[in-house]
Amino acid sequence: MAIAKKINGFITQSSFIRKMFEEGVRLKQKHGAENVFDFSLGNPNVDPPEAVKARLRELVSAEIPGKHMYMPNAGYPETRAAVAAELSATRGIALAADQIVMTCGAGGALNVILKTILDPGEEVIIPAPFFVEYRFYVDNAGGVTRIVPPREDFSLDLETIGEAITEKTKAVLINSPNNPTGKVYDEASIRGLAALLAERGKALNREICLISDEPYSEIVYDGVTVPSVMKIYPHSFIASSYSKSLSLPGERIGYIAVNPAMSGLGEVLGGITLCNRILGFVNAPALMQRAIAGLRGVRVDVETYRRKRDLLCDGLASVGCRVTKPEGAFYLFPKTPIADDVRFADELRKRRILTVPGSGFYSWARSKDSAKSGRNSNREGRQ
Image (tube, rainbow, N blue to C red; front, side, top):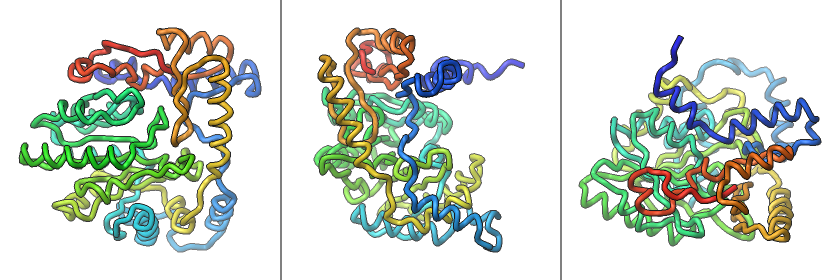
């Protein structure tokens, strides 16, 4: 049976990350896991904190009526209240349980947000480089992705974002700390972006949403802080998960936070709850919702990631490789020694070192012309 032409096309564009991960599985079976150096998938290699393991053991053995049954589609009230309390403390804005919807990871959260807000043909601006499946998420909701290049240091280029805004623009999607660069957009950048969206939204007589994908917000280094988009811009969403902060990516537990200052708040929350159901997620995993409610303030050991970051950055610099030290997350995005990053990744693969070509994250989006047209006109060698 022939599959849809669109999906067949997507397969050819699909994530280098998964391709290299699957290649890693094959190589580990052939050579042994200890002989393959896998830097492909964003799989945390730090175990969940002991408190997480203890909490799960407690929940599995506890006699709780209806422990595995359906709950409200937005999630358990006590879990939503716990998430709201934590975000209120860290984001500097008062959030209530009703403004939180529990989701199947941050990927689920982004799909739900986009399904809720996008009409067919409306546009989402995404600064490059970015997690490549964002494009598929936008398409899932009938939207159109417009890619804009960053500045040379991977910070937001407000000029190119402004040029990309049209009468069809519905949202800007940012990821900070960024996958794959580890860049944290500072407060001045977020305030500048908020002012731009407010100004252009007013001129277009529509609200332009800001969606902040924040699964790495707890993994930052050297005193860097992640600014609160909610405190700065009223028409904002946070999509996040515990995949990285608690090393639980396979458990698919995340959430959406909706800014309480958003206009039409009740309608937005109703739409998000409906879309959580009709997209097929139905609800976030019950056991993990119960676990999260009792783990406020628990996080992985970020110092372990910092030591590994420094070790790798210093090692790459010692052999003449150019790399910007990431401010957060657990990725490195060095410049490859040859222009063809795909070829370079393949050469590393032959030596059982698995990496992902930077072009898989649209790191080529450097020129304004390429951003406007979507053409791969300037693929930069990044690994």
